[in-house]
Amino acid sequence: MSNYYNLLPTKKWNEELSLNENLFPIDPAIKEIFKKDSQSLDNFVQRIKENEVRPTDYIIRKRKRRKITDQNQNSKVNDEKNFDDDDDVSTGIHSDEINQKSEPTEDHVTPLNLELIQILRSLFKQITRHSKECDIKEFLSKFNNLIRLPHVQLRESFEKLEISQIDDKLLEVLCNDIIQHEDIMYQNYVVFFKFTFLEKVRLITSKPSRDLLSILSKIAKSKGKPIVYGLLLPLIKESQEIARPQLEVITRIINGGLSEESIISLITELFPDFRTNESVSEIRPNHLEKWDDSMIEILFSIFNQKFQIENQNIFKRFIYRLDLNLEFQSNNQKLGQILLLLVTKHSESIMDHLEEVKAAAEKSTTFMKKSVLGKINSLSKKRKSQK
View 1 (cartoon, helix red, strand yellow):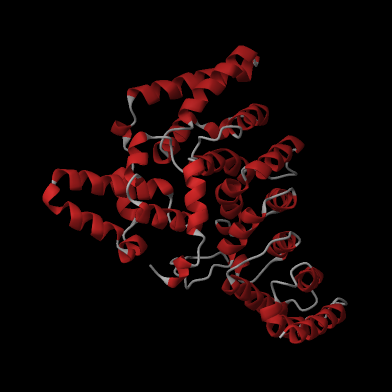
View 2 (cartoon, rainbow, N blue to C red):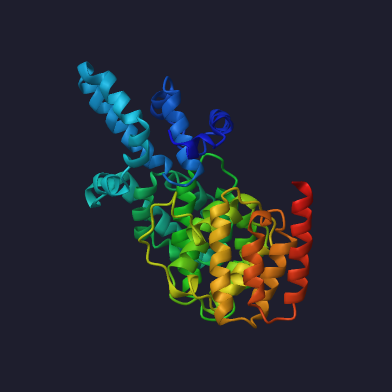
């Protein structure tokens, strides 16, 4: 295993997994996979920690290997050794292969699931017309069965159900119910947010409704990370331009109480460390390179929160991009405010990057430049005194 992974607190995650099974369904077969295989479990939790693998992908692959092994007892030792080898853990989980083999077709959606979808669709229409409490309770009960499907199958089920058409009031009731459960997979929450809120928010052309913003603010506090991956990142990274209504939703969520872990996930995805992230060839929209007003507003909201990033390469990449944008927008007041936030709220995080921040601040022509440079000088003296 690489030195990078050895730095991760495996023991802590190991302990959490033994107490909390939210990362995958409560399934005896899955428990059996890791029963006498602590090394695989270590690899598994480390990969989850860095968002480099979805739990279900690893489990599908692991189950396949176990099935093959059971069929060929003579090669059991070699199979297990090859699968759990560090190099295989790093490169052996191929999402394309998994998607190709596990992507459901129409034949794979069982009649029971189709029946469940039909019942939910019928209840949804009844609730829209009459809003009876008994119908709502039945809808929640049936939906709780649906939300626990494997996430690939869940995606297809949501398409058939046309869940994006659900009204805000019923969506709020639905969200208030499912966020209370601790046995729903993380990836299923991501899929749910993509098929409900993402579709709704993308279609907004005027000021977002109070009800919608209220729902999102409440959910973000309890399910922040799925909201980041199911709503915020798609809105930011999959749009050529972030319009005002979508910007208001994004900043409201960020400012509304996202956890530190969620904030770090967001900034890590926006400014990835390509040394540990394989998506180097990712096509990024222009506003992630040459920041427009919307992107600067989002970054201001992010850095106005408190967080501590351990991977300094991500912080360094952000400062590099900040420096480039100040060349073109030297008098942008929000960029000046971001500089001020760096040397005040995030002063501990930039201690190893004071020269880079100073070089960026020198390009600013805002009235905050003097305050920023003065704070950098103070931090430099503090750093020298600590050596």
